[in-house]
Length: 504
Image 1 (cartoon, one colour):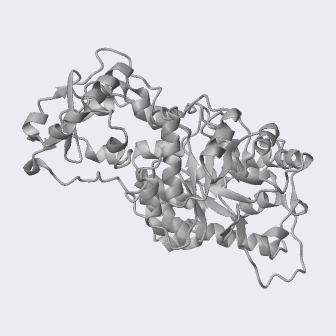
Image 2 (cartoon, rainbow, N blue to C red):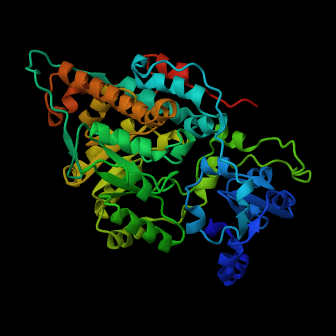
Image 3 (cartoon, helix red, strand yellow):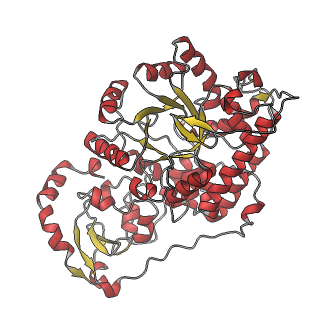
């Protein structure tokens, strides 16, 4: 939050910070809080503490309306669906704490009941697509809008999976496939099969346990989780529930305040994270219209915007983007390497030229990615970009010196197989894991990963391979991959779950 505060106000607030401990000891009844319910005098209760949000509300990256909605009220429930528990400790200059709510007025936070359809038993679900159908009945409308949305017309969002349908397999027969070994190594660390859990933000939008579900699901399946910078839980809370020997990597959005970036890196190192995935494709968040529309909620209170037109340019993504430094450049990579001993992986590569630059700047790996179709619409899918990336790396002698991963649109074990065949060391899976958690928590995450694992095993057997390193480009045909208007299989499962627009 501090990067968006008025500098003068921030200075004044910091000068008076020594008085806050005394303020926090002041007991305030709810009847007093309720009097401070206007834009000019806005108090909000969060976890039993009373905060004066008057000056901060207009600067709130997620929009002022959500703060004004809870002016003079307890906002703990909605706060917990977005923020990490320690955000006021990390950003002490957000809003002054004026006291502690009178214990007799503290009520147990009630989680808003979601309108749920009748969920099928977990064993009934047979593929990753079906988990989205269940999740839609479990998630709130704003949560589903944030998770499912892509940028602009969502062409790239749909293309990410559709592109896999333009790659055909070339099975080999009469091969002894009695024993299949799906194990691989990623940056030197063992992984049960070539899949990692992608670093997706705000997991508590999907499930109260947040990223713990992902951590435990990854541990159950013996794969690696990439911990997000902007998670609902801290890296300490996430890694605290891992199994002995379980590997974690850390994803990094570089903050405008580089000291905060370094602090986060130190925390990740202390938690045992082995690699740093630096996201480079988000100098500004894309226009995710479903998410943006959910930000604009007509207010039936006395907190109208004085006749001003509601700003629909925000949403959850807008809140997140305020933390990210848009000036990040290749020249910053050496300083990042000097800051940590973790391997540096550049996440968000979308062309061969940048893949080569990543290698020349000493990256140990890259993720070919368009941010799940959430940034620049009409950017190509990762699977389409992958062959040119591998060819360019081969020309500079980097093919076996820097590991390449992809994410975006992976819904089947055959998608994983195709990516490996075209040169990827592994893939990252995001939305299917989120949808698994939304419906069934850790058990859902574990099941989604198991289905992908089973499908990948089947693809290996039927293509005549017994080890991951036997999968190569001779086993796929990509003649139609770059032709976006050729006939391709109709992705009925994807289309059934796809929701193009939020309701007006």
